[in-house]
Structure formats: structure tokens, C-alpha cells
Image (cartoon, rainbow, N blue to C red; front, side, top):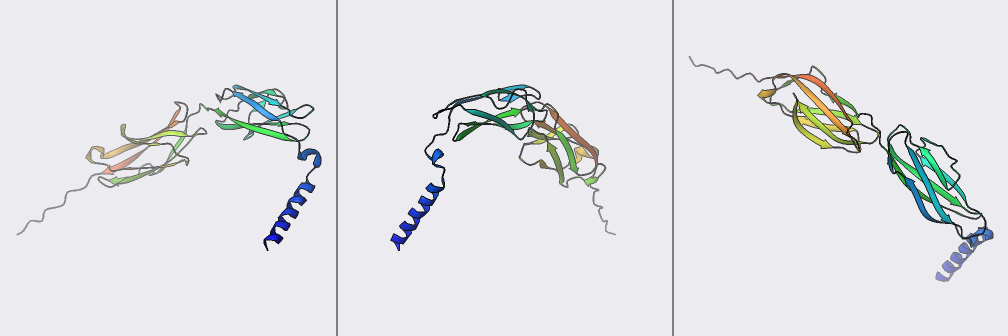
Length: 225
């Protein structure tokens, strides 16, 4: 049984070898020595310079092809040379530069990340409660928030009547939840305010609403006749 298995394995490997182009089977891909993409963190519309140094172990010349993912911004020099320049887009985020170097037989590639820091303020929206809602002193209030920015959120803070309550670190989703239990110092019309700060910048966005908090009426004391 094992003999049959080894025979089949050898036959399979022979098929693979025979199906390969003999011209490229024993050829070598280019050796990429250095990839330089600078600066690695930029503002929108800044210029990024990309350069690659590679060695061809085979005869002939090398060809080059730069690309950026996700597709944004634009190359101001031809993207099929060893050195090129790219104008950053106005949308913040991490962009992956990929350089593919090819000879007449094979190719090699390398990637590098450039971060575009968007100066716009985060978009912040209090989803719940709604403005004008009524609550009772001592009852927990759940506050749902949507806070987003193309570079992500660094921190989200809750203020009640301009008093700092607590904060949360940014997370991969845009949804945040705070809870707050009002005491007698927050009776009447009360402001809920959310502030969110973007990553890599001091840009801050906010949203606020007014709610109503009512006190608890004291229980009546029943008098015996």
C-alpha cells in the first residue's frame, strides 16, 4: 500500500514539474534590498516620495510598478519607475504602498504603510436618549453614542451639566455606551454632552442634548385616628 502511495506521489510531482515552464523553473526573482516611502505620516495633499533598490540576479533589465491600496491620491511621477512621488488624498487613514519588481522571468514585491492624518473633527451623535426625554432621580440612564473619524477615535468623554463624568478609549466600532445615575444635584433640565477626540490629532467633535430629571416625591405618612 505504501509503495502505491509513493508511486502516486512521485507521479504527481512529475506532473507539476513538467507543467512548469522550463525557462522559468530555475530562474530567480529580483532581490529587493531597500524600500523607502517617506514621510510615513502626512497631512492631506502632502507629497510622499517612494524609492526602491533592487538587484537582478538574471540578465536583462528590471521593471517596476507602484500601487496604493485603497486607491486614493495620485502619482505625480510615472508609477513604473524605481522612484516616484504620490500626493496624499484628503481622506485620512492607512494606505498601503506596494512595489512590484520584475525581471524577464519572475517578480518580487514589498509593501509599506503611509498614514494620512485628517484634520477634520470627529462626527458625534447621541443616539439615545432623545432631547426632552424625562427621567427620575436615582434611575440609571443609558447613553448610546455614535462617534467616528477616518483616523479612528482616541477618547470619548461624557459631561453632565459641564461636569466630567467618565471617558472611554476609542474602539474599532463606532458605537459607545455610557451609564449615568442622576442625584438631586441634577434635577430639572440637564445637559448631556459627548466629546470625541480623533487619533493622531487634537481635532474634537461633540454633541449635546437637554433632558429632564424629576425628583422622587416623598411618601405620605398615614396618620392613625
